[in-house]
Structures are given as C-alpha cells and as structure tokens.
Image (cartoon, rainbow, N blue to C red; front, side, top):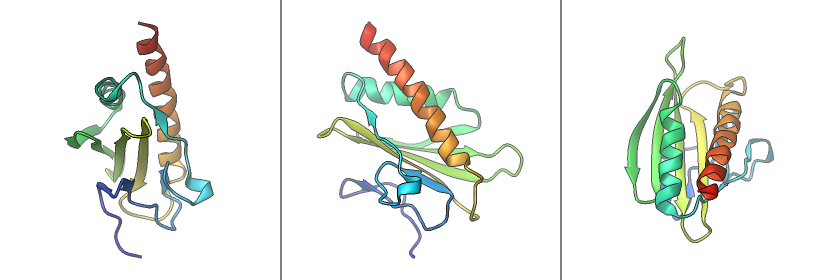
Length: 133
C-alpha cells in the first residue's frame, strides 16, 4: 500500500491503512469507522469550535488550515511519536469528516480511537452550547 496522503483529494481524506492505528469517518473498514460531526450553525462557527477543542488538547499543534480543512499533529507524552489528526469540512453535507492516524508503528493500543471519541464528545457538548445562544 502506498503511503497515505495528508489532505483532501476529491472530497476524501486518505483511507486508513490495514494496521489498527487509525480511525476515520470515511473508511469502509468497520472497526475503524467513526461518525462524522454535524456542523455547528455554519462553516465559520464549526471551524471555530473545532479549533477551540484542538487548543484544549495537550501536545497538539495545528499545522495547516484552509477554507475546508485543518491538519493538526499530536505528540505522544513519553515517546514523542506524532499522530496526524485531520478535519475535512464538507459544506454540501454540512458535516465534519475526520481521520486520526499514527505515523509509525502498527498498534496504537486504541489511542487514536479514544482521542477521537473524546474529541467528538467535547465537540458535541460545545456545539450544543453554541446552538443554545
């Protein structure tokens, strides 16, 4: 398999590799599939909420941002491994697709799945707050 790309091609993030160290809302691999996030009001508000949640995550830095995409890197605490976390803002469907994957190794002991489950819960909590305003 070729090396996964970073970014969006034809409305899709890179698919997850066969190794278990990746999750995505766009994968066909059932054990790695997660649910896309609903927009919060509009694109601008949604990006703002995503960036706020990212800013609260330890050892996380946004590397790239454009109109419909954010790429962040999360560094592990002890071994300093880097994971890529990507968000694609699908304006047509009004959802945020994401992918979180380890750059190296095979197993991540469920770290990417836990990270994105926690991220999704925090995002949904903040999204509800912005809808209540």
